[in-house]
Length: 314
Ligand SMILES: C[S@@+](CC[C@H](N)C(=O)[O-])C[C@H]1O[C@@H](n2cnc3c(N)ncnc32)[C@H](O)[C@@H]1O
Picture 1 (cartoon, rainbow, N blue to C red):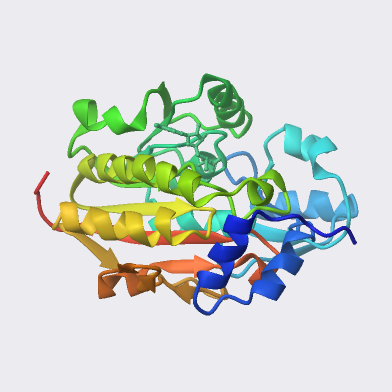
Picture 2: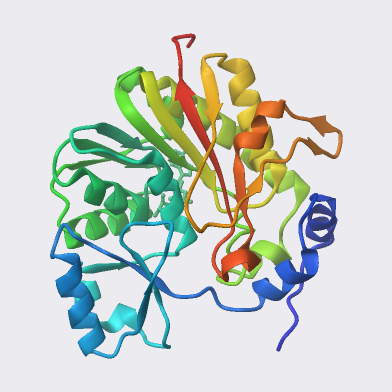
């Protein structure tokens, strides 16, 4: 097995994280992430899709924490299959399905997906809405919006409006409007290194710090677009506290009506949010955030925070 090269900064970061098994993490970086799919019930009945896939030799096992998610047990290229092209299935990482499960969209709700492209979570939200309610799927990047648009179409989503804007500006148009908001923020991707080794080779504290300022602005913007009583999920696929706990710590300080809630998902191994890191001491409430490490399920690493807007202070 080839040995992955990681930057000096990244090595220092990993050894600074409490309770992380660095050896297992580095080992997981060298293995491919287990393949998984979501059956898209907007297009067909779950049982029918499962039967078609099984007849074609796809071996599946239910993922416990996500309603329509399945591990693919055998080595098979799903992206060439008709069922993928027709939108009967969406190839999506098992842990990447968790933020929408926590968001728990309900038919009839108005939902903002602030950083939406290429649309795995937008299409998952649409599935939960069952055609009732509206999703506004926004992204700043035109090229990625093309992929978003194609995935929305492929999956048979009819109640999605796609916008191209800097998410930081969204409260100008939609302050206090949405029932639920997902901020799946751009990040340094330390939870998906096996898909993108560059993330580990080039990782730096400086880049992570720079990105955390954008992430904080996006989190505040998403929060300001919530109605009172609304729910926001902030998620990243990275491990750096600067892009995770620091962002949420700042958010709940700047917006006192932002209240953190606990996250429960059956079968998903989660660690609590970090309360002390380098020279930072975070609000004890940050324990309610969760971290999922890539070695726990041979899947992606993720950070998630669930925030409820309990008043209006924006
Ligand atoms: C982690 S990806 C989102 C993945 C997507 N939610 C999914 O599940 O398929 C982060 C996205 O944030 C977008 N982004 C970066 N800066 C942004 C900004 N200022 N406003 C809105 N989107 C932004 C990127 O173009 C990228 O598509």
